[in-house]
Image 1 (cartoon, rainbow, N blue to C red):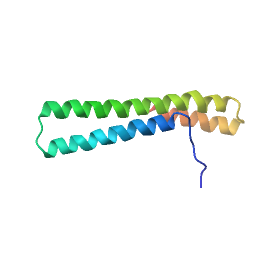
Image 2: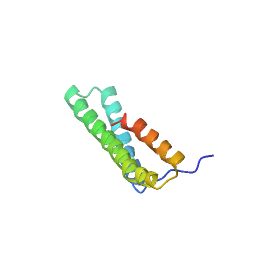
Image 3: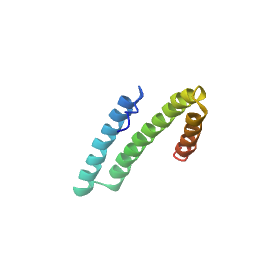
Image 4: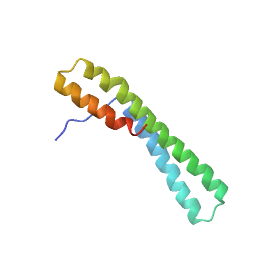
Length: 92
């Protein structure tokens, strides 16, 4: 089993995603009860922004911390960090 990969921002990200999850449930209820499209669009926009901010925070944290560690790592680990960077950059 791999060891947990945790950063100081993970609790903040988790909290933000849980809030977005609650908003998304509300949107589903709004759809099922026939709320207006304007109300739905506003709430979906809020969910989208919350998830986008969570993703941005996660990626920024990865870049700030994981790449700093990679600079001092042995060549093989450094190569893995560079490969990880290339992969995560797709999600920016």
